[in-house]
Length: 106
View 1 (spheres, helix red, strand yellow):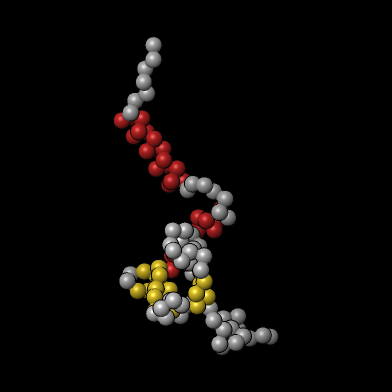
View 2 (cartoon, rainbow, N blue to C red; view 1 turned 90 degrees about the vertical axis):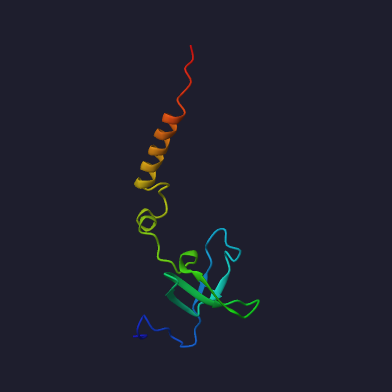
């Protein structure tokens, strides 16, 4: 047996994370994960900024360290809208129709 699946083979292996938020300037970049902890009321990842060597943090939700959304996991990313999103869209369109009635043509 190769040991516990929870313990890395080498103790000096670095764990990395990638910024996934589409509008963040660091999107797509990978960093060494120093720590992941709840701070400021949310899960955050901590890393050293390579340009300044200062400790920085980002919300884990903006990285590949965030847990996968259950809806996305169940649908395999194939569904465009959740049922709740579809209901909101219907409500929006009904409100739109009430505020802006269709023109009557003779």
